[in-house]
Amino acid sequence: MPTPKRVTVKAPAKVNLALKVGALDENGFHPVETVYQAVDLYDEIVATRDDILRLTCEGEGAELAGSGPGNLAWRAAELLAKHAGIEPQVHLHITKRIPVAGGMAGGSADAAGALIACDALWQLNTPREELLDLAAQLGSDIPFSVAGGTALGRGRGDVLTTMLARGEFHWVFALSNEGLSTPAVYNEFDVINPHAPEPAVAPELISAIAAGDIRVAAKHLDNDLQVPAIRLRHSLEATLRAGREAGALAAIVSGSGPTCAFLARDAEHAIELAIELQASGYVQRTVRASGPVRGAHIASVQ
Image 1 (cartoon, rainbow, N blue to C red):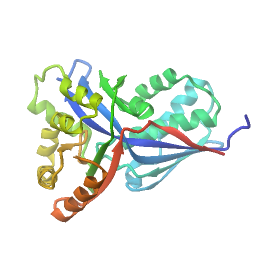
Image 2: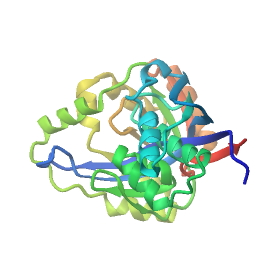
Image 3: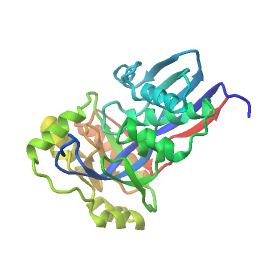
Image 4: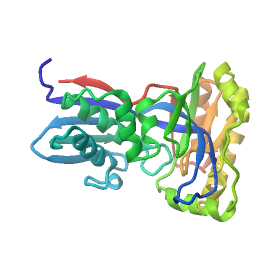
């Protein structure tokens, strides 16, 4: 195979159909049990050969993502290079379409995309399990951003079990122009739930996803971070109510927020729902997406 000069990867956003959170443990982490679904809203990560490691970013919220060592994609390239015993010589260029600090794992998607892109650019052929292990070292959501599809996450969310999922879920996401700090939301959760029980996803949700029964699944969408997110951003309550009044099968805060996710009956209903949400006055902007889709994957090699 000729040495590639440029590798382009697409990495999807995620939505949590359920996010159950346990009490803070002695290591300062919250055990979780969550149902992830990857949706077709993508960041694009382009890896090009270079003499040094550098990162550029464009698109929505690019200025918030950063272009240095604080960016998860930068750290992913460094970690993979260290694992392979090589220098991280690559220019990563990220085009953002997933909201930054929006509860949809945009940063995790970029890190997953960087792992896949750099592995191909450097022709490392790293085994899949090793890539997932590196992803877990970088962050809890990143293994799922690599894996995609629909999965049950345990531990810190990084211990994945692929789930049987039939049918297609159609979503409308209400986006915010201002992010919401994940640590702040978890801190608020601790205030409200100092003795939270062991996290457990409702088995009815898992069965409904396997059966492709969207309406039953809608009844069991659940997010333990929703109440703390609303306490920190009161306007989220009005946004969720607007979605329910517009006919959404379910309305839920995505992850730690502030993005809100609304489940539609089908693609046509999602269009109608987006229009009504925009007209409600409570939603700044919306984006439609569907899932499940595959995780971070190579779109082109040059």
